[in-house]
Structures are given as C-alpha cells and as structure tokens.
Length: 259
Length: 269
Image (cartoon, rainbow over all chains, first blue to last red):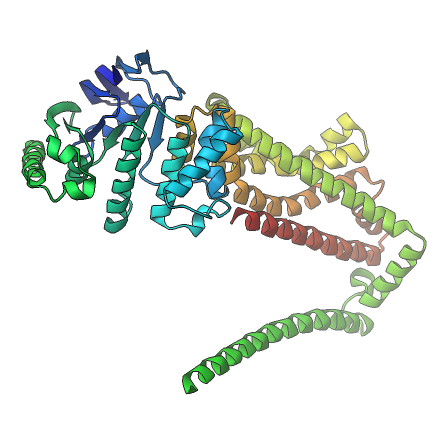
C-alpha cells in the first residue's frame, strides 16, 4: 500500500490584489520505504507541497492520504525537517530531541532511552546536557534529525535540510540520513534544488515546473544507483547520465521562463 | 624561551592597564560625587544660593538623623517601597498577560489597535483623580497608578516581540501537532524573555513616577507625601531629603532588575 498518496492537489494563494496559483493538479505517491525527491526552479511551490503533506496548510483542492487516511491539520504522522536546525537555544540537546515526544504526550522512560540511543547512533555522545550553541552546524542538524525521528513518523518530509551546511558536512549527513532511513524502513520526501543530491538519495525524482507548479517530468533512478549509498552513487556512470538529463530539463524550464 | 616570557609579561601589562583604567573611572566618579556635595554645602553656607530653597547636605543629614530616631522615616520609606514594587509587578505582569491575549486573538488585536495607541499616548497620571474617587484616597489608588502607568507600554512592546518570533520555531512545534498554547509556552514566551526583561527596566522608573504622583494626590503617607508636605510648609530640606532617598531606592531596584537579567540570561546560554 502507498504510504503517501497525493491526488490532484491545487493550491492558490490570495492577496488583496492578486491570486497566485502555486500548485496545479499535482499527483504523486510513495510506497513504504521509498525515498522520493521533488526538484524544480525556485517558486515552483515545493515548500507549499511539503506544508500540505505535513498538514500545516490545507490545499485549495485535492486530497492527501497518509497510510490511507486523509491528512488533517495538526496530525502527527509526518516528521518535518527544515532548512536550518531550529533547535530551541534555551533547551538542552536532550530537551530539544525529546520535544516532539513531549508535545504529543508520548514521553516515557522507554521512548526517552530510545531517543538517547538514537543520538548516540548519530555520533552524538555526551552532548545531552549541552546547549545548541555549543555544537557545530552539522551536529545540530543531526540533533534536528533525531528530534524528527523520535516521534516515529510514518512519513519524513525533508525541506532542503542540507542546504545550509558546508559541502563536506553535507555529504556526510546525506550518507547518515540515507542509511538511517533505510534501516528504519522510513518513507521520505526530499525537497531540494541540488540535482546531485536528489539522484544520490532517491528512488524517484519529480521535476516541478513553475508558474503554476505542475509535475513536468518523473525520473526513475536506475537500480544500480538506488542500491548504493549517496557517496558511492555519485561515482557511478549512470549518475552522470541522469544528471545531464535532469539538468537539460531544468534548463529548458528556466529558458521558457525567460522568454 | 624568550617568546613565552614576553607573552606573559605583555598579558600582565595589559591586565595592569585595564585595572588602571578602571581605577581612573572610579576616581572621577567619586570626585564628581564629593565635589557636588562639597560645592552644595559651601555655596549654601556662603549664601551663593538661597539656603531656604536649596538647603544644604549637612541640614539634610541632620533632618535624616532626627527622622530616623523618631521612626517616621522608615515607615514612609517602607510604604512607598511597598507601593512601588507592587505597582511595578502588577503593571508588568498585566502587560505581559494582555500581550498574550492579543497574540492569542489576532482579531482582538486588530480591533483594539487604535485604542492601545490612544491609551498609550494619554498621560496616565491625569487619571489619578478618577482612581481616587473610585477606589478611595488610599494605598489601592496609589498602587493602581503605579501599575497603570506601565501596563500599556509593556503590552505594546511585549506584543510586538511576540509577533517577531521566528515563525519557523512555531512551524517546528506545529509539525509535532502542538496546540496554540504549547506554541506560546514553548516558543513565543521564552524567545521574548529578553524583551520582557528590558521592559522591566523601563517599568522600574515608570512605577516610581506613578506612585509618587499618587502620593502627591492622596497625601497621607510615603515619600511623595513628604515632598508635597515639605513644599506646602516650605521645608525644602525635607523635599530634598525625600528626593535623595527616592533616587537611592530607585537605583537599588534598577540594579535588582539588572541582577535578575544576568541570572535569566545566564540560564539561557
């Protein structure tokens, strides 16, 4: 069964003078354990789409189902990771990591232990009592990942979570996220404008065009890349072939925009 | 190892220079303080200024001692201090609560916006006579004055800081299914602590204004009463004594808030 199912979503933003169609007739789906990416030029409604999946905004038209149930505002089935870590500076790392559990009243000794173990697995040992300021950007984003995973979400939504990091940290973190998600059999949706990242991490890539945002093309990532970790995937010949294809499509979208 | 020696030496010199600088500042601060009172005493004795109006430090000191021995001064001080601290706490607390209500209901905040502006622009001490008529010429009226003078500006400042909290923090909470109250408690309020503390500092001064004016009007007890009484019987030594005591306690209260700020911000880091 599909963990995520989006059927004919359209979303319009209204202001006093204008209406902006951010998304038009977008449909997509993901099976359990699948990793899909959404790429596209800026302003193609990627973040809007993610917010709709998270139940933060309800679409003007269309339905979203997670595990066969319609998404409602304030549902607790998705985990959302933002561009920056947004750890709360006045909370310790432990308090930050346990935030989601606390808010959904699932905080007990067992879950707490699980979260600490998860922190350790991410290479974060002896930082529980520290404050976010004392950690590096990469470490903080890892804490943010733990915070998201701690509530055991059915679906993980990643909103350019690596874009604010330096290249080396980014590659390491991609590797870590990929392996963690595979290990826990998590379904994930990644929004990015890094083509390489999308290819290296996902099973399927949706290319959105802008004004209004629609699905322009769907790329299936070849098996050979899919089964490898992001770092290894980048050295496969198929990686470059797919990169060129997506690059050309993105260019054509950008050119269409200019004229 | 000549370089190592040099660094230590330079550091010692640097530290010495810092201490010297600090001592210089302290010296001039003390000098101004002493010169001010010495010049005051001198010019009063030599009749450069009218001793009846400007009194002199020695006369004020004598009055202070006699008031302390008959026990009337401590009771005036404690009355005013009690009113000021209570007015300050109520004013700030109510301001933060009103700000929270405005944040809670964007509709209400839009509706009330012009009234807040009017009420903020109006001199609140002008309401004094009305409070005295409603609440009676007593401590309640004075505390109300001390509170009302700070409450609107606190509301406005704290509310605008509530609104300026990075919405992504709220987004994080919402993705975990947080209620509006949880968003307020976990993100909005703690991020606004620095603003609340700095409005405390402003409110210390405001509460004193409200309470002193309140005591002028009620004229029963307290340092404000001593000022107005001294003015009526033309005893300016009494007026100046009260002023100096107010200055001292207002400073102490301000320092108290600063201490609180340091404690709170330390726990923030």
